[in-house]
Length: 399
Image 1 (cartoon, rainbow, N blue to C red):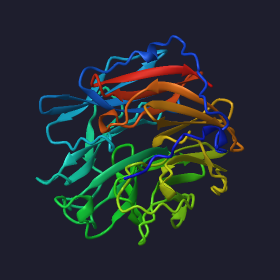
Image 2: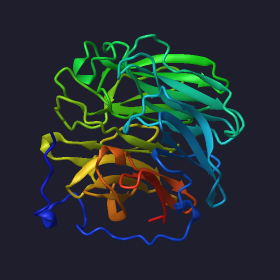
Image 3: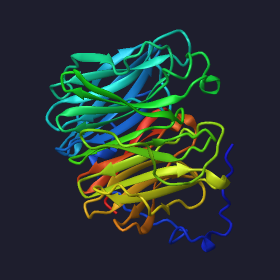
Image 4: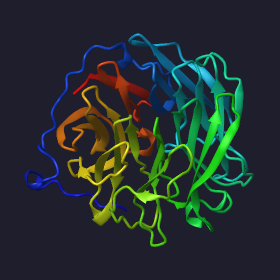
């Protein structure tokens, strides 16, 4: 469906500084020893405000799916704990469960729970814990409609003293047997603010028409909440957009970048963002003009004016991006390039620096979306090893 750009004239390309990626020496770290068991997949990494790292994943045994997590104590993983298990979940390579922590013992996690006999009939189930995941005493459906359709691609953030969730909602898109090609209506973007005890405080329709199955990403600062996602025009232009909540109201959707990618199907490749009170950085994949690439843009958080798009990849990317901020104020973006997880560092001013080879992987669906987060004075990665059916983790020193 998407043509790959030739690397034949690598030296002439102007969007990166060197064709040969640099290496970063991996230091010994117990975090590079994965805490997951066999038949594990769908990793997700999250670092909370206290510096604790959480890794969630799914293990499948016979017909039972188990959502588990481990966290860090010092420089090693804790014994995995089970959040929930079921034989009635929708388990998907691109729409994976997530865990989030407020840094004060409260955790939230989600899965996709089947709501009907059809393949694409599922809702979003939220689990809450108030004791660092020792017990999970609250669970509820995030989407409040009763339509047997698609609801997923959740992103979450800690906003003030509440949980904020964004998701793609298919209540207007038709029943669950039709799949993406059979939608009669549009996929929508919705958001909700939920108290730590599970009380729903607000819910909003953020965009009435979006791409069907690309991940969303939500970031929160003292200046509000911003959600980045792949939009969809009536002309099938599927570029990135964002909406911002200032504490009182939401802005209208605004293009992050005018890539002009016209595509008749969903590319299953959402954006990732990171933000603090000073700067917000966003990375995303586009295949516009039959030239797949990974882009990056940043803005002072107070402005949210992204007008400095730069290209990060080497010309053979399939996207699946992640992003982190570094201790020196720079950004780090990871992405798939051929059969490798690559990393590129960008200054706050938007200048790309070295490209780093992190690890070998595959581009099949079972390999999923590689994850990255800050870990002490380094970066931690997690991804599914398709060959062994297990999750690998790797810690590297900060570039």
